[in-house]
Length: 105
Image (cartoon, rainbow, N blue to C red; front, side, top):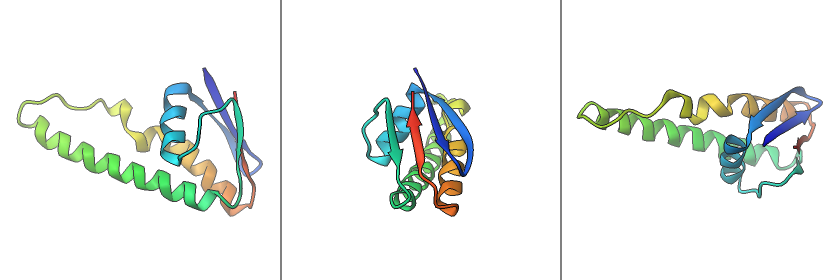
């Protein structure tokens, strides 16, 4: 399934269900066919996603250290920061322009 995030503040962001599920879990929200991220919620949601991205980077650094000892390296395509960047930027633009972010299937 494909999800689309829209805001008057920036271009729409389209994500597949796996990434959308991962992000809404980080944001502490249920995955629904439609919804809204209000202007009031955006600062806390941005902080939550940025914190999760930093945590992912730290975990990857540790895994990379272990990989030097013979373990398998994580796939680059699974990096949360890279995959969530467009959505994070949309939320930041929406916060700056006082616009909500809409979610739809």
